[in-house]
Length: 571
Image (cartoon, rainbow, N blue to C red; front, side, top):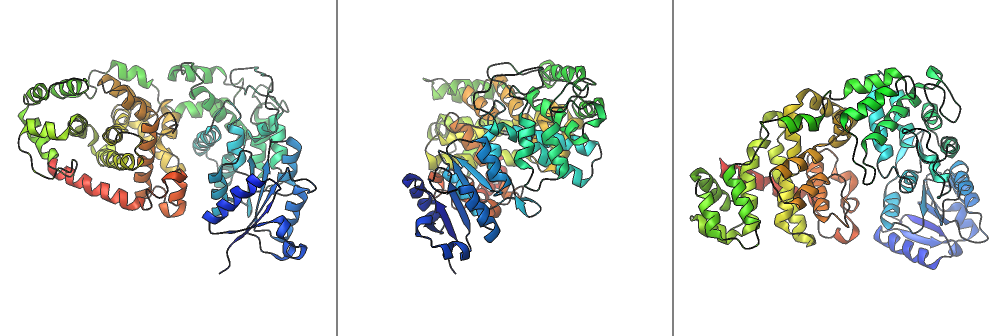
């Protein structure tokens, strides 16, 4: 069978070498335009055609338009040095390109695009990478459009929208800010209220122009154009008022404002739950449709999570003996005899610790029966993990908590294996972080049960991460709540920070959270939340780590087997 063939149009030698490397990794064939005859250009069933806009004497957009006619199923990509507005409008509207990459290129994004195309509607594909491009250039940051879409979908379901309306709403929200890509990079701020974007009021119209020929439903386009209209008629671009504003745009407006209110802004302290509710209420009948705001308020938890938790007297707490032992172990120059004396005050704890020490959790090759011997053989980090494993298990075992214990322990084991391979963080510390990463769910489930059931319903219905639904209902996530509890337990700060960031880690500055993130993903994928077969291993980890975990399913299976072994040892 003949290899898929990519046509590359460029005179940039570095770019050409990069694409040769990518094609080789994907087992594809690369052909530069200089090596292609006119007859081949017309007859070849291209898998992809990539044009560098800087190529002289070539109208890249016209060439891609021709390819669209001759090879409609070929992926069409454009490489640009800067996102010139006129060029991008032509690329999307005339050639209907699937992807636009801004130099310097990301090899992973290109490989992902060549490997799989994301079909959206009407048999056409949308330039999804544009979303990443414009979000990286604005203060909203990555994920803003996705969160807005999820919040809007939750509101749409509550308001009784049909499936077509929900689909249009989702697409419109995903691309609501895409017009910002066409704005000058240094555009002066233009704030007129706390809910408006600090950028030019031109972006809704520019966004409409950018997507008008890519097959979006009319409702989605109305969201893009009208999501900054106000209920009182003082919005933009058309100063529409009240119910004249399309319903989907009114929903998107509230969802957009909510995300701006809940996402942290630099060093500024986040708004409290009650402050957010008060701001939304103050704009009912002003910026927003009152009915939609009330729908959002009805979804949200009535009480402020932090106010409730700070006043509770029955919070989960580590046993005093365990707390004392952990404090000793964290000291630089501690005495094992002193640690053994503390633990020996609870003989049941001693018995369980010895059982765990001889389980698959530690991998000891010989059985130990003496507590002091076990402590010295295991070492400080392993002893800390055993103590935490025993003491957090009761907090994660209630039937209503969806087997959090098994998931947390498995996540710790997978994170440990990842760390052993990457050698970027201490494996025992990775285990600790994995074991504790979901402890915040226990507090939200126990003390806000009705609201958490709404969280679970939204996450299941929309297929979104649980922490996105939590942000909608509580203004905070279980990751933040978990970090707060660990601080109260006097768990060292690096673990608190890793737990707080485990859904959105920065690999360069948060390596422990990064390992925890991938361990958590592997567990969820293995449970069927997102099939590994669809995404492939190379989509999950950076290229240097691809050879390390060629079989993540096996990794998870081994971890789950260890979970059962540990459970048998504790019982």
